[in-house]
Length: 254
Image (tube, rainbow, N blue to C red; front, side, top):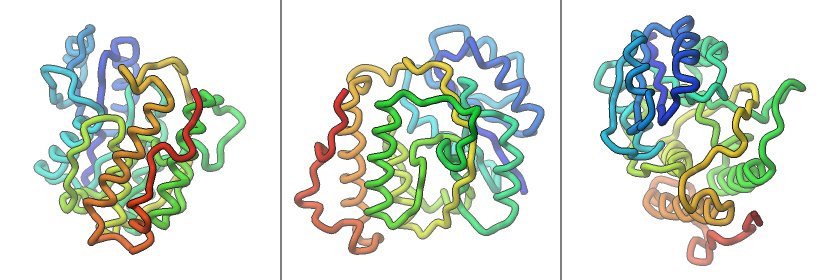
């Protein structure tokens, strides 16, 4: 089973050396997608035995994920594991994703920070947890899933399943597009627990998305748009009453 570990980075000079050093203990094939970093991150990447995709300008988290998937498809990998580079995802968890993937029962192994949460886990910022919970509840209700954490970027994907999907969401709303297409294409999904770590609770999403109500509205608008686009591949309950679907329902006050 050939596995690629793909890591999007943007201005991660404080973390990149430590993270890549640790990831190298658990993975032979590492791809870094540098999303237009303006600090010393690009220079630091040269110290490590990794492949690099470099964006000339910041293209967004979703675009970095799309690039990682395309690389994995073209280079013939069986699985791709994605993780962040800010020390909020522990490289020591990589073997658990590989072990679950090897069982050959699932197409997506999704990390959950709220599944079997241990006492050593950090407390997430209240507004981020609230948005995560409300969006996850909406995804579960519409798509018939049982997710506990719809936004965790620590995941393993079966590459042959990704090759059937068509992504164009470049920003932080990418998970909303992914979950709709995962159900539309009949992917088998499971969650495994990962440690909840928040090194920087004040980290920016960039621009207006730092406002919780704006961020949630953007997520829900993306979700509705993808439901409409995939309507012919989804169960009827997924798109029921979309005409009255409002992204402003259950707004999170910030």
